[in-house]
Image: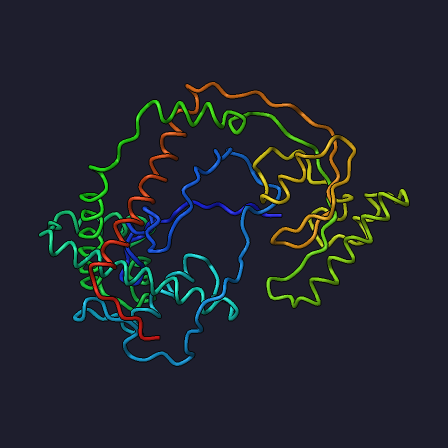
Length: 357
């Protein structure tokens, strides 16, 4: 299985949303204020995330010319929304699947609205982006391509020009400066807070704690019907019973039934997995097992798992001095996200947003 890297890519283009919005996790939706666990620099045996399909208002297949208005005078056009969606597809490396169209269009539209609210706020605060700042950012983007010709070809693919890119870069910088102006004075992370987080979550900062694991996966599609999911669950339950009640060989069942193509041929062997390395349901179930134990059927975004725990390697807690910078960065990012969420909520409350689809 392939681990998904969640690094944020920040590219200034005409068709992408603001770099700064992405960096600050900008969204008008409320955020979870629970500090995230420390992320270990290891390769996951299972991907950390998988798409889910929350229920949202359907987006019309034929969009009107104007899809939203911000404070009466600013419009979000159909072309702007579709360009932004295409930009998201480019970054994701795939076309939005039909079952996710409504969710993606709604999320991107919200981000565009937030961007325009921030841009208007930059005007109110008389924020300025100097020409040399714009040119410096353009040069950074241009230098990320192997040749000038490759850069020009990318502009053509985006359907834009260098002048249009300069204008969008200027807007991005205005938004970035507005966010910095609002957030930076409010950031106040004390050393005591960093130490307290470490003291309360020291178990998350371990090195070497791992379990040699095997699993049988009965995979399901995100678009599977309730009947199909029920059938997969029943299959997983029957396989678990064969192992626990009938002493069937776990490896043989994995070779015959597991839909994880990368591990089925080796009897479901995932190798040594460190705590926090896999998706949460799998991780919790695995580390609750003793050596040789078989888990109940565990549902994850990938389907239904039967997990077998092998040899456990206990880990050691990393000293505070070695992880304090990591904790500080993580908590600052969380604080920025919370402040950003509040800032956007205030802008929306003070403004007038009309969503027309």
